[in-house]
Length: 454
Image (cartoon, rainbow, N blue to C red):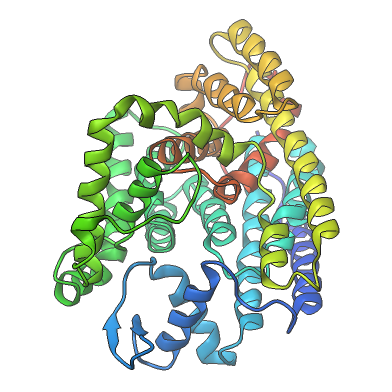
C-alpha cells in the first residue's frame, strides 16, 4: 500500500495545524486579561513564575519563609516557565503555550489517522485532524492553566512518535513520555504500552525490549528531577508528593474530589514529603478497615470521570463568573458532551466492525455500549469500548498505533481513577485519540491491513 505523497500528506498537516492554531488563537485573544488562573492553575502559575525568575520550584509562604516544593508535578510549570522567561510571566503566555501544544497534537492525530486509513481516504484522515483541531472541549480549555489539555496533547504526540518506523521514533517516544510523566506522573504506565506497539512488527521479545527502552528513556528524562527530590525533600519521589493526598481523598471521600481534614497523626508533620507519606499511611488504614466501602465507590469514581467532562466551562466560570456565567457554562458543557458522545460512538463502531477475532462478540458489545453511551451513566459505554478493543487481541497491537493507543489511554485512565477519585477533566486526556478513532471506522471492515507507517 503506497503512502500519500509528500505534498498531500504535508498539505493535510498544514490545513490541520492552521485551523487548530486559528481556533485556539481566537480563544486566547478572547480570553486575554479576562480569566486569571483558577483552581490548580493558581499554583501552577505561581511556581512557573518562580522558576522563570531562577528561584526554582519553591514556595513563598505568607510569613516570608521559602521552602522547596514538589506537591504539584513540575512538568507543566516548567513548560510555562519557558514561555514566561521568553515573553513575560502572564497567564496569557501560558495560554499560548497550550495553543501551540494543542496545534501539534492535532497534526499528530492527522498523521495517526493517515496511518490507519488508506491513502484513498486521506480526506477522512484530514477530517480526523480537523475534528481534534475544532474539538470544543479542547479548544475552550486553552486558557486554562491546567494539566489535562497539555497531557492530552503530549499523549497524542507520543502515539505519533510510536507510529514512526525507526529507532528515532522510539527515542522520541521515550523523550515525550518523559515529558508527559513530569506533567502527569501516572502517564508513565503508558510508556511501556506505546513502546510495545511501536515500529509495527517484531517478535514478542522485540516488543518487550522496545517497551523497556521507551520506559527507560522516560525515566532518564525524569531522573534529574527525581534526584533533586531525593536531595531537597528528604524523601525520594519520581515526580511529586501528592499520591498519598489523592489516595486519602479517594479513601475518605465519596468518589469525587472533596476537601479533607488533615488526619490527627499528620497534623504535626510539616515537611511536604513527610506529610504526603503520612496521608498515604492513613489512607491505607482507612481502606484496610473498610475495603467494601472503598471498592463500592469504584463505579462512582468512573462515572465522575467519564459521564461528563465540562472542564472548560467550569474553569472559565470559576475564574471569572461575570465574564462566563452559568448560561454559557451549561451551553458549552452541552455542546462538548454531544461532541464527545459522537466521537465515542464512532470509536465503538470501529471496535465492533474491525477485522479480527471475536467480531460478533465485539459487535454485540459495541451496540450495547452505544446504547449506554446516551444514558445517564455514559462511563459504561466507555468501558464497553475498552472491552471491545481488548477483544481484538493480537490484532490490536499488530496493526496501526491509533486503536491500540486509544485502548491503553482509556484503560490507564479508568484504572488510575478507579483507585483514587474521579473528575470529568481527567477524561480529557483521551479526547484527541478517541475523536480520531471514530474516523477509522471507514476501514474497520477491511480484512487485509498493511501496517506500513508514514
